[in-house]
Amino acid sequence: MSVIWLVAKAGNGGDPAPNALRRPHIHKGPGYGGHGGNVVLKACSQIESFLDVPEKLAAEHGADGHDTRRGRHGDDYFLQVPLGTIIRERVYSGGSTEEGRRIFLPQFRYQFLRDKDTFLVAKGGFGGIGPKSFKKGDGRRGTHGYRARLELELRVMNDATFIGKPNAGKTSLLAAMSRAHTRIGPEEFSTTRPHVGVLRFRDRLEVRLCDLPGLSAGAHEDKLMGRRILRHTYRSRALIFVVDVARGERSEDDVLEEVEMLRQEAMLFDPLNKEKPWMVIGTKCDMLHRDPLFHLDSLFYRLRARYDDEIPVIGTSARFGLGLTRAVRTIRQLIYPDMLQPRYRLGADPMLKEYPKAGRGESRDQTPTHGHGTDQAIMQRTCGLH
Ligand SMILES: Nc1nc2c(ncn2[C@@H]2O[C@H](COP(=O)(O)OP(=O)(O)OP(=O)(O)O)[C@@H](O)[C@H]2O)c(=O)[nH]1
Ligand SMILES: [Mg+2]
Image 1 (spheres, rainbow, N blue to C red):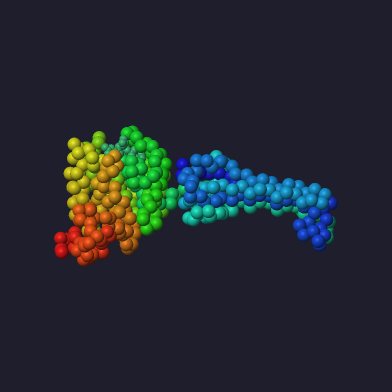
Image 2 (cartoon, rainbow, N blue to C red):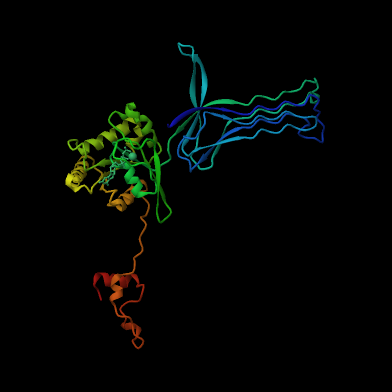
């Protein structure tokens, strides 16, 4: 459900009291109608889907005026939507179908790229003004609030997307790498909508990984909802193709062909995907009786022969946590190629414990190294130089 249609109706302005009179010291005017509430959409990073969005959003109407009191303004209606939402308004095109139904065409309005961003989709009506404020003596009734037919499309904010056939182990991989946890099952299509997991590095860099439902051949023609899945690659900066190298029930299919098919589908859907850096992650490497390492090796060498620049191929096992650190580092390298890698501090050297502690009478020069040795001392110890 990445595209939804809904109607946003702002509140109408309230009517004025019949004898409301403007005076210089009463700025807002006595007995005027209150303004109608607006309908406002707001981006929220903690929401991930349109599941809770109602079909109709209606803000409160402004209340009518009373003798000397202005009518109450209607409350605004705030709807929180996920980050990455695109707002389009469906505008009447002037034509109609053969059956007589009017044709509405979507027009772009706004897209949410930052957290807590807001956008006013329907403005509330103005409150009415009493007749005595006008020379002619005619009043102004409250105006109607705007009614907008909206189309919301979600293109999830992410840095890299997992693309793979159903049951390739994408969700397990994401769950093993990050805290995202959703349904993992032996049956195909256990994932039905995109989920995002965040990798947080020591240097406060964040990489958002998106797990998608499985893709199959013909996805760019919307086979098995392929286009609705691939649209989430729009904002990703790198593509990660996930293949099951243990080849469960597809032992006769070639791994390289599977990777090529997935990449082809992504490129046919959106030519921009051709420019994005990509890598391959082989999953289920723990099932050694199915020769996963052979498939992984052949994939690596054949990809290297086919593409000049080296495509990273990494074997992992989500079940046993193998190869995950390497996969995470490669993903980071793929997205931020020019950034420095975080350097891990040298831990205490186990050899240090074996050195005798310096006695009281001994001079300091005789102790080989102190608790946290200098770089040179560590080099000397680790390289055996004394
Ligand atoms: N042995 C082994 N099995 C795994 C591994 N990773 C995933 N599986 C199994 O593979 C099956 C599918 O895993 P999922 O993570 O749901 O696969 P998926 O690609 O998300 O599948 P869909 O969402 O249906 O497209 C599950 O039964 C997992 O237990 C692994 O590293 N080793
Ligand atoms: Mg899944």
